[in-house]
Amino acid sequence: MKITAAILLFLLYACGGGGQMQQKNAMEDDGMVKVTQPSWYDLETEDEQYWFVYGEGASRDKNVAYDEAKANASGEMVSMLEQNIEQMVTNMRDRAGTGDNEQILKSTSTIFRSVSSKVVSGLQVVQREPYIDKKSGQYTYYVMMKLPKKSIKEKFTQALRNEEALYTKFKEKQMLDELDKQIDKFEAKKKEN
Image (cartoon, rainbow, N blue to C red; front, side, top):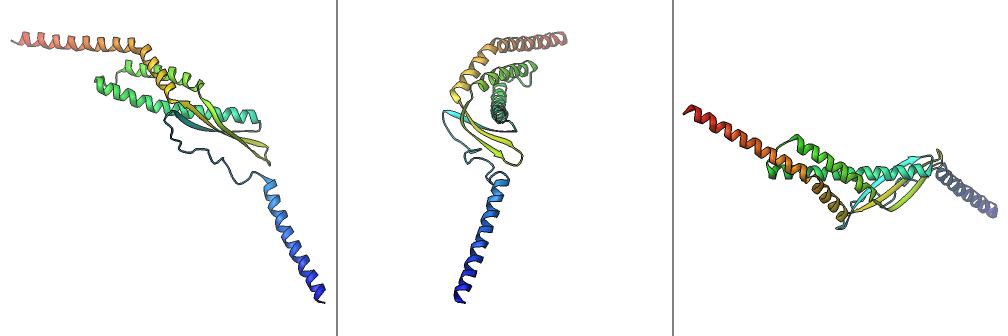
């Protein structure tokens, strides 16, 4: 009787544990593992030589997901550049006392387009990792890309040099307009006297 009870307890214990194990495996087989992104994804990465950006892409085609992830990272870099260039131009306008002149704004837009298109082509993939949702068959790709800060500075400096003639022309026109105003004021005072 004791042997029968021991065998029954053993069987109940063995069957119970197996059921839990099967349930756990079924949960893992039904879809993605609970981790939704790599541990390195979206970390605040400080580096003196590089800027880092992250991108995510999803598609049933693995290559399309990867391309989308890279495109999203490139978009993040362009957004970062836009903010930095806007700040630099604002500082330049403040120092030069030019205000919100349309010519400067057009020049800024030209510089930004020129720099951003060149910069995006210089991005390098540092890390990449695909995940697949087994239920839907959809891939999710994560990428981490880097860009040398020196490269951005060089490209921005070159773009400014290319636009320098436009800026110089603008400053000359602004000075001539100011001179005309001063002459008009002088002539008006002369007529009053």
